[in-house]
Image (cartoon, rainbow, N blue to C red; front, side, top):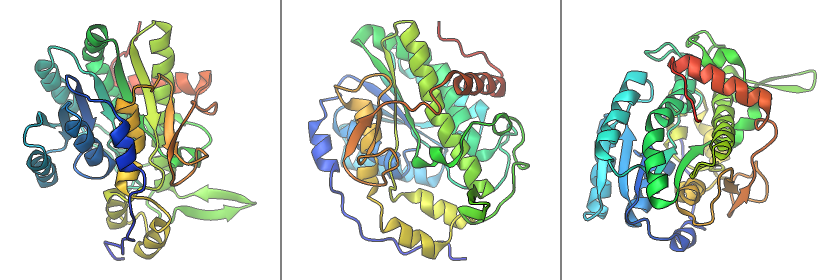
Length: 346
């Protein structure tokens, strides 16, 4: 299997215009996970350009150092801080949160939980959880809990703060959240098939286990946002919970998934021809971070429908299939059990 694919030449159609509309972010501190490439890198670049102190949360790798150097080269006057945060380790997440707390006496204006992995093998993290669920959701749940006091400080001092989560159209790949994907079952959650659609049985499309696990994490991102929105609104908090999806954006996720055996190179190249650039894919989270009109509970994504793969970003509401009592209770209970902490918003 080839470890790369022929990337189509795509042109950004909407990014420049949308960024032009954003207000200055001078005086704000914004933390973003997963900024070495893709939508996270574009979001970090954008908020730094708009004047925010920008905290880059990544695993310590050559890629994280190179992306930091590149941002500093382009924006030498910007206040950009590199913080080690390995989302595959709760210990690392807690250490990163402590670093941010020490840095941000004046509060944290935005936490953007952007980082994600896609369709990786059935393997466990050091903490025992599925690598996709811990990276995409559980560690972001923990990070949000640890940084909530800083967000509250910023909200009181400057009138608002924001928690921004990133889902995808893959949230539609499963009907419901399932408890086992939040438990220490990494490595025993279905195996490593390589096709997105495993087979068709009795007219039903059965999703391959890699992609089923991924869809569980993307549904968890959406349900987490619904939980936060409900809990923060109930206490009349000035913290907003928002969410976006990038459509089909060409980022390094495709390369990583191909290398791990989750996608074929030829079909990936064909599929991505119908997608959009990472700049256009980043517009959703960028609007969640900085759009003056963004409200808690807003959902931003491309096109005229919530499954659209490309197009101008528009605003939706949260969806009933995860914004319901059963799903929200399962998400919150199982996530607290996983991090072995009670996350209270009262």
